[in-house]
Image 1 (tube, helix red, strand yellow):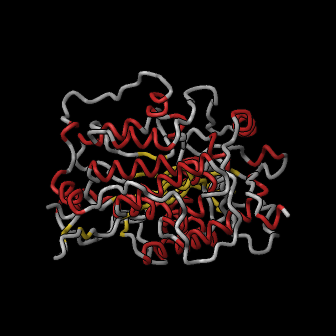
Image 2 (cartoon, helix red, strand yellow):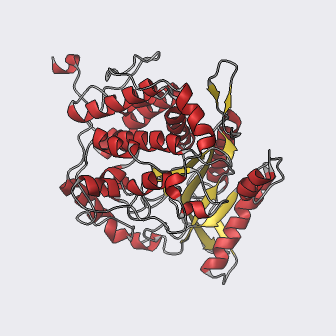
Image 3 (cartoon, rainbow, N blue to C red):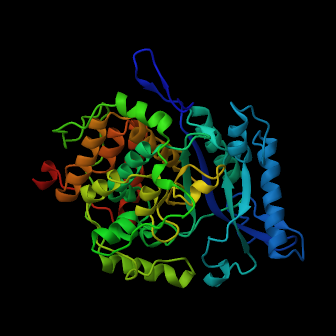
Length: 453
């Protein structure tokens, strides 16, 4: 049996912690030595990065990245590969390059320079990202992420714009997920997409760096009548890849789907403080209007009439995913063009590289400099954990509730989902986030009986 799962004396599977990594993108304004900082008078604002006079833009980026590296290392965050003891030489081969913090340029970030606003013309900008090490799913790792965030925003003047992303990768260390797990993960991702988008700025819905799988994937195209069969590499027997050494054990120990799984939300042990959210999706006209707002700033924006299909619904997508015979088919069904909202590196082309990536990547969140960064990472990890470890009847109950939320307003929303996933603290944080941004994001709530009267 694979080291990724072991059986207890009662015959149940015990899994090791998941692992995760985060990439957070940002914009760093900078000035040449001697240039006037027109914003220096603002109390509490960190100093603007300074670079040597005459430095090229590339040299300026390198100087800023080096300054961030110095601060990180002064505070115990080692940049670059770090000494670490791994269980096997293979694990070291796979994970060794992700053992330390990374600081890099990011050319996917776009947006106007400060000169557009008719002032602050002397400010230049560097487009950067911070990469965390691959860490186990534990409190210490999440606190290290929060520590890095605080260091960055307290020591360097930074900001984000609509093109900045907050990407979270969730894996199982050096192991690859089995096809059985990928079916469950992909099914839950598909079913929850229309709920989870409420946690991010609606601009993310028209960002080409995170295309929605329910509207732009091969699965959605096929469900709308297009013939788009997955393409396989001729030299890889991907249909036989199932990580069978522990898939069979998991299948034997997991209960089968309940015949009458409840589509009613589980009563949470915490007290909810926010009315239920209206789940009605944005119209094509609303999405096009958002795209029009972003285009003048140079952002990478979707053309809304191209490669966009009607949402096939929860169970049509789940059915097609669960019928897949290989990880490759699952991967290709929920992809289409590059940069989907969720990426699975499990096509037969990916499997050619035995040391290649194996983490599920969540790309739908916008860049931020707040504690929400840690919360979103916990949500991504929690979703994968639930998909992999939940009894089948519990998983199918959540899928049923997601389906019901598309047919009836006021019965289930993203807060209910987070409670069902076993993430009460994150659900409470999501309530506060939605309450703070509801007006700006155009979020509406279902009227309660008290409000109706």
